[in-house]
Image (cartoon, rainbow, N blue to C red):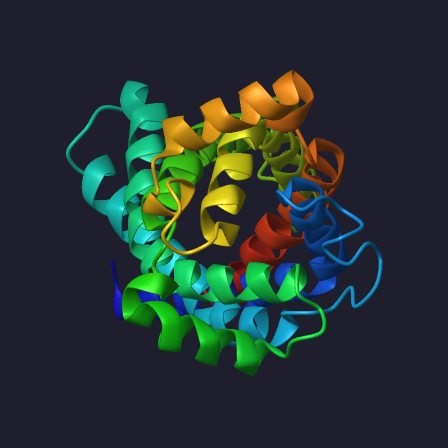
Length: 267
C-alpha cells in the first residue's frame, strides 16, 4: 500500500468510526442495559444515556483507524497473490485480521464504556480508576477473546456482503457507485450481520460486566451463553437485538458511507 493510501485509510477510518460511535451512543447504551445481568431498569433505564461517552470519544478514532489500515493493507497483499474468484475470502481474511488488531484498542475502551453505562452515577474516570485498582491492566482487557469472537464472525458476514452488494449494484448501474449508495449497502450488510451475531454480543457484555472473580468473568464465551440460555432462554440470547440492529444499520450507513466518501476525497 502506498503512503498516500495508508494515510487516506487511517484518516477516513478514524473519522468514520468516531462519527458513528458518538452519533449512535444512546442506542448503544440502551442495548448494553438490556443485556446487563441486572436488567434494564436497575442498570439505569433511560437515565444518563451518555454515561461512558468519554471512553468512546478517546478510543473510537484510533480503533477504527487501526481496523481500516489493516483491512486495506491485507486486501492489497492478498489480492496481489490470489485470483478474482477468491475476492470474498480475501475480504473475510482482511476483515478478520483487522478486527484482531483493532480490538487491542477497542476492548479497554469498551470495558470502561459498558461499566459506566450500567453505573451512570459513576464518572468514566472513576470507572477506569476502579477497574485498574481492582483488576489491573488485565481488567481492561477482560472480554478481549469474546470481543474478537464476536467481531470476526460479524466481519466475516458484513464486509464480504458489503463488497458483494456494491459490486452487484455497480454492475446493474454500469458505473461505480456514489458514496451514499455505498452507505446503503453498508446499512444492509451491517444490520444483517448484527442480527446473526447478537448472542455473541450478549456473551461479551456479560463477561465485561461480570463481578471480578466470578466464573463468567473468566471469559468463557460458551459458559456465558449457556448461563444466559438457562436463565433467560432464547429471548436472553437475543436481548437488545432491535437497538443493536438499528444502531449498526445506521452505523453501517454512516460508517462505511463516510469512510468511502472521505477516502475518495483524500485520494
